[in-house]
Image (cartoon, rainbow, N blue to C red; front, side, top):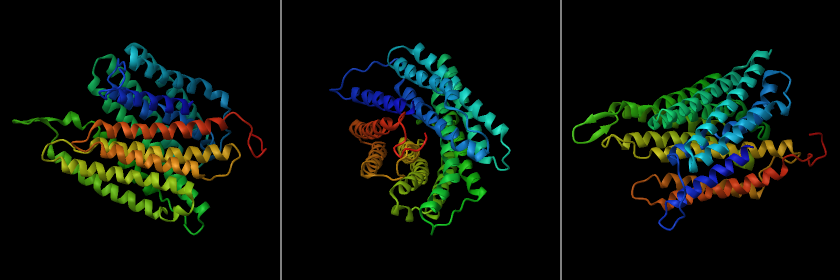
Length: 400
């Protein structure tokens, strides 16, 4: 389900960007394309992927019985159908998009309600990671419902901050929780010379960054008039945020090195996870630089570049690595990144760099289209390959 939504959203956005070229095809649009793109890329396929992790690894964390797959058919079905309706409605009928968003929000609500039940039943003494993941789901549901209300009221300017709040408060938080819990463990298992290190304060530090960025998405509400310059963000805010992001990004890169970024290149699949996490630090550094470079104009200069370092670099790379690992393990295959996956991973890195470069001034839409093409090719080839494995007996003959 997640693979289908992922590939469909990438194809739709590629067609939209293609239509912006002078020679491109005419693409119908009933919703602002930026809103449609941001919503499905942030809260569309990611939570559906989360379900596969939360209801397999989650019960092990919590010491409870793993629920059966049939219990997830309703919430995941609602999300899948809802996001297909969202994409169709974004092109042809705004009301259809609203209905799809409502279904997706309902499906997400049911999914996380089921996960909260597991957390509530758990006898485990340490439930922190699962509790944070469950709370993040609540942020995601609130963001979707808030976006639906904003669109219904015609307040489109509220929709993007709501979606980005869901991105940081739900998706990024979930990735950070899993990174803190699993990345040191995976590294120590593959490289015994690297000791696992994950003090609790590191988790709170990472969550604090996500909370800060979720609040910062509402900075446009701080716009103030400046004589002869129109509306500008207060420079004091930009200075404080920029310096904080630079400091936070530096600490995240230090953490990436401490967790074994350099040593991880001995194992390709492990390196994919570490490089993905390092993109989180790079995204913060780019965002901080964007704020400081834009002080004179009162507008961040590299905002979309930093955002895509986060989404394509951090989230996309870790998704590629983690889903490959989980799919290989549950299908009875070796936990390795073969030459095909390794090549696709580096193609994703190249697409991310192109998208960051396209945020610079005086660039054309060609770079953005090239980045979107790279993303689509990676996800289409990777998703199709893994989808062939699903629904079949394990290749090693074991049950499952």
